[in-house]
Length: 195
Image (cartoon, rainbow, N blue to C red):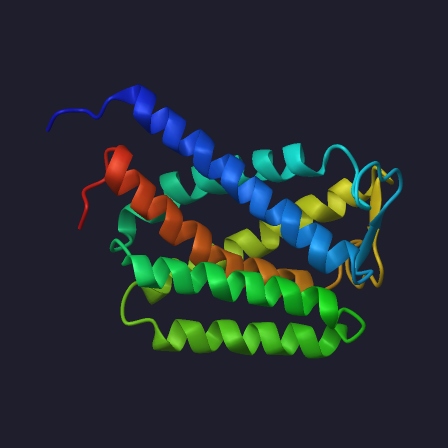
């Protein structure tokens, strides 16, 4: 098997991480900041700090790498409609977490039940999605909890280690989107087979 050209692959990965970082920055601004789910100590633009987009881009890179190395090789390549649905559901869950952030227990239960329903209706690769979702939720919440220790931002109603519990549900839903996106990019530009 011939190895893929490295420059198109590298550019695709950078573009994906920049795109995910941009999407997360917009969701943060229009859902979490706008509805008061969190606030930044030193906002400079539309309620956000200067470091929000670079942070989301680097976090996207870490999620991409983790998904690529540990989980994506075991996953069947998702169809484009599956990928679009996963991203639309993630954005919807992000929006709900902002709009209804004053009801953290309802969000937590709703997000977890919704994620379990998604797993139950996923025709294949349930174990891969489940494991990646749990790993991403734990790692993401831990990272954000540590990041709050800088004093640069704070959640409105932290419940555990400086973050609301519903945040884990947001990561659970995001895990479908990131894992499917990584799998498609790796099949197209990387060394993973397209199957």
